[in-house]
Image 1 (cartoon, rainbow, N blue to C red):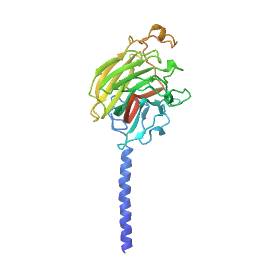
Image 2 (image 1 turned 90 degrees about the horizontal axis):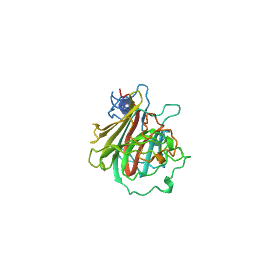
Image 3 (image 1 turned 45 degrees about the horizontal axis):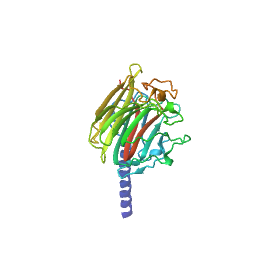
Image 4 (image 1 turned 90 degrees about the vertical axis):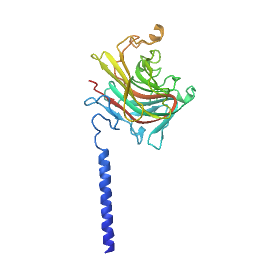
Length: 299
């Protein structure tokens, strides 16, 4: 009799556990609320109908075959589930899947906590780009400590200079934001625009950083926006609002700019898409989580 009673108790307990586990995993599979992404982060613009969305695998980031790290930077998972990375140059790349259109009108989102700004040492020999690598690009080091989300280009290297285009939305460790444009690598850099101090130092605390770019006026002009979640509470504030309609010139000489024949004017507007979206940093150690790229419909 006692054995039968204990058996019933065990069966009942297993049933309760199964129900609880089922409810838990069912909740994980629920689609996100309207206006929020897979991580529950507010979207500024809705995803384009039929558009592509990419979300980092927080359990094992490099299990995703379109996500890679230039220079083979190592990740270390932290107790809170985030991932730590560091070095003089970090490039976390989200490639375009095979047989799909390159990233163009996009909302790029990520949360970051800068642990420390590192020394401004030059790249080591091990950081020299090898074009046979499938992981990304080679480029000169930027001697600032900042976080840059960028898109509308491909590899940035001297072997394929015309592929190295980008719009880059940046926030540095002192809380200054800006936009950069690169018309070709490396002779097509422009002056920075929309430079403004929008918050205090970001070292030692979580912030959200969003960079958005999309074409307007029949694909002839590019709108650039960036947003900060300054308190890590999913409340986003627009900090830049910029239009590239031309007259944003490369700051190199004519001789240097036209030394590579990319067939572009010095104020080229990057209305085309690009194969690679990059989460970039220079000269810092930082934690990251909830990275995403979405094709958007801003209208």
